[in-house]
Each structure stands twice: as structure tokens, then as C-alpha cells.
Amino acid sequence: MKVIAVIPARLASTRLPRKMLREIAGEPLLAWVYRGVRRCSLVDQVIVATDSDEILRFCEQQGFVARMTSAAHRSGTERAHEISTVIAGDIYLNVQGDEPLTRPEHIESLIAVMQGPEVEVGTLKTAAAECDVDNPSAVKVVTDAAGRALYFSRATIPHDRDGVKPCYYKHLGFYGYRKAALDQFVRWPESSLERSERLEQLRFLENGVSIYVAETPFDTVGVDTEEDVRRVEEMLKLQK
Picture 1 (cartoon, rainbow, N blue to C red):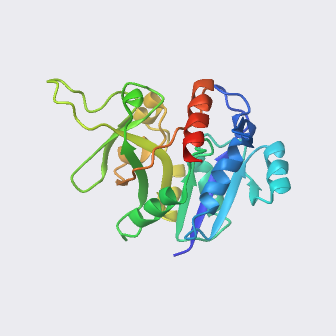
Picture 2 (cartoon, helix red, strand yellow):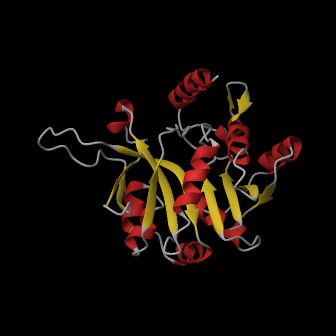
């Protein structure tokens, strides 16, 4: 299968301005993500999809493949779809540009879950660290017995009514799509749950498309705040 990895990268972030080019442990955030994906030998092409001239110039200086995409896009999935209309592939990966702890094992697990012909959309989960269980910035996911997502939420799910201490799973910002799934996504209007949670993957669930979820032991931290920056830098120190 031909695997195209897309890294959506906007410069106009609100909670942490210009975070794609923010230095983390001596390297811009985007560079950590790109190199992490590139280390996976199963990926045929890695493309930064941006609407920023500054990010495009940065990628050119670093030797990263990048393409300009529409400034009207509201989500990384829409940017991945635009890439899918101009570059042919069997599977398109959407790796969030704020995941500096990306490693080849994440990409390998994501590609593995996409092998089944019935799988239109795939993603990853990991056991949630205690600090993430009640953190609304860390998205939680619950799945059925076949590994399909039942729901994603910023709330703590499942609710522990009787103190049984369930295993909580954090959703990681990695997605795999078939082209047909991307085509469907951009045709549907924003869904009500998507709007409420600000989670674009809920649009698939609300329209009856299953999302298959693979588990990985490798946690990541999506960078949205200064606290996230500090946490990532500490984790990177431990990896050295």
C-alpha cells in the first residue's frame, strides 16, 4: 500500500501563538513531528500541509516536503483531504503538527490498524497517565469489544460511579483514512457533538462511520500551552 503522511500545520494558533515554530528542547515543534514520522520506513511520503508562507519557507530551508493548502480549512482532516485530491495513495495519515513525541512505532501501529479492508478510519489510544484522566485537554476514548470507538470526549469517560477504577484511555492525535472516508467527511456539515466537544473525529461517528482504535504503549503530549511545553521537554530529556 502507498502511505501518504500529512502533517497539518497552521501558524495562527490561539492558545499558544506560533506554536508550530516554537522551539522545544532546541528544535522547532514542527521539526520534531516531521522527523518522527519520517523515521518510519513504511511511509512513502511525508507532506506538511500549511496555509502559512512562513511555515512553507521554514520547510524549504529544512528540506521538508510541504504544500500550501487553503486558508479556509477548519480542521486537519480538511487539509488531509486537499492533499488526497492531488497526491494518489492507498492510506492517508493525519499526524497532528503539535505532537513532538511522535515516533515510528506510532505510525507503524496506525498503518497496521488500517490493513483491514473494512477499516475506513483508524486512530490510536494509550493508557492515560493519572494527570490526564481529568484533564479536558487530554481527549479520552472508549471502545467496543472489536476495538471500534464508541465515543471520544474531553470529559472523564467512563464515569466511575462505584469506585471500580476503570482503565482510562487517552486518544492520541494520529489518524488513518481511506480516500473515500476523507471525501465523505468534507461533504458532511459540522456535527452537533463535534461542535460541542471541538473534536472533528466525532463527525465520522455521528454519520455512522466506524473508527478503529489501536493501542500503543507510547504516550504523547499534544502541545497547546506553556505547561505542555515544559512537560514535553522533561519527557524528551528522559528519552536521551
